[in-house]
Length: 202
Length: 230
Image (tube, rainbow over all chains, first blue to last red; front, side, top):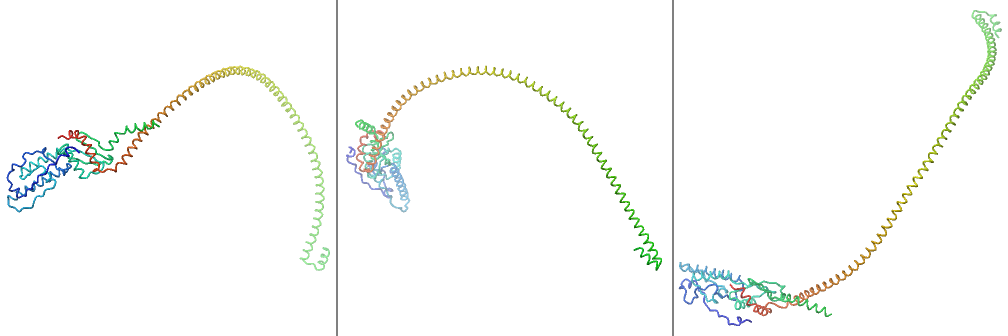
């Protein structure tokens, strides 16, 4: 295991999701609220594995923003409340991990803007396995990747049974064959040399 | 009988009886006359016929004799003429034969001369042809000798080429064998690889591989980091 994996994980800060009423009566951003946080500062939870997950996070946050804005408008006009805003687990994890509390519309818009930037610029590592990758394994890999390489990296998972074992990596500029097939292919000449030596010995 | 009839009428004469008696009288007389005339006529006819027959026989005999004489005369004349014509014809034929014989003798003489000349000419030509044929045979024999010599040289060349070809083929076979062995070894390497891949492919799931994968990625961490910088 790498040093990054041995480091203690950050404990998520428990926060309560604001209700529409709280949103309506919320005061301007308190001092504890992280101000001017850009997308480069965000940490992604392990539940966000791929770019699709990140896109879902953005969509979910857009939905929450819409619902909270609607709730605020209704609170101002005194209209009956339609219900509570439901946050997805991924969104909750993201907000907790980054200690975010976007209660105002401006905060949400700012956060949404940064999240869209993050979605567009998130680094992707393409990983092709010989067998289907389960979620736990993907999360372990993502965790190592974010601890060791880039804290916002996501992966794109592929399947190629002919690799037999190992992984085939593709970064934006390079590819690395860490599969068993690649290892054997590199040993081809050695095997031929050994066969020739065996024939000469006979 | 007439007389009896005449006696009966004299007893009872009548006009009709008289007429009939008269008629009977004349009839008998006429009958007698007719018979006398007939006998006379027959006697005369017979006499005349006998005379005519004698005359006719004499005439015929005379005519026969005259005819014989005439025919004999005519035949003699004809025979004489025919003999004369035959004689003339025989003479002409003999003369013609004589001329023909003479002509044939002349032609024979000419033919003999021509044949002699032709034989002489043919002899000369045959001699020329023989000489020409002899020269051709000589040239053919010379060409045959040259051909045999050329064939001998070709056979030697072919033998050399065969020897070279055999050596080249042996070299090619050895080279091909080496190539095949090399290809076999390479293919054997592929076979071993495929065997290892198929044998190991189903042995590991991703969880089992994960420590090894992370370890390998750890080894390449620096490169990955450089690639994935924002």
